Length: 219
Image (cartoon, rainbow, N blue to C red; front, top):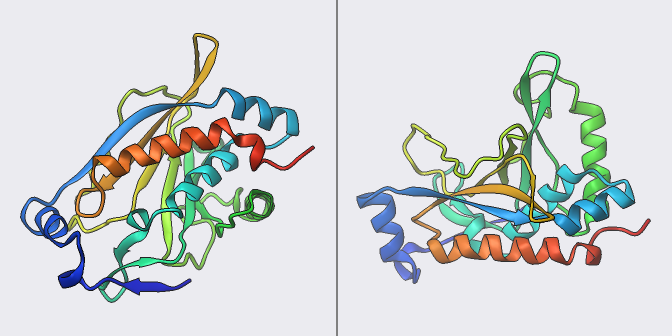
């Protein structure tokens, strides 16, 4: 886990960063559907849980691009992590609450899945906000609202507006024209990500879903 400071004065994104952080502080969200027809079929046939497969897909794309790993560290330095890991929500049907758990990212899905199962067995039943302790600073959030096939989702965060990492929210998947569609919303900070970068997220996630047999383990 290494944090790489950015020298703003020599950064080619400096005018955009300063405009959207200091003059017109701006975050935005985009919601689109992912076609997970093949992914759903493959995970079912292999006995793999869909949720961690989706989490790993998102984390893989996030870790490919510096823009999605750029943030302020605990010393308020701007920079980017060498890699970041997903923190994700787990629902408790008993009291209708949720917990947040994190699992270290590993490029190999099989290794990540093993650690996810371990974390769920150890912390998944703890009905508290932060179920797994010692969360490292290089974590980005993923959540799920599996009861609603939403067409739009927006977070309203009332703070200083300097949280720069992406925030992902999944909805309830549904069938349309014999395909399975998953609503996915991503919130980005305009200081580090433009519409082009949002396009990268959905384009590369769709490619990864379409080629899931390349990274899902065999039976």
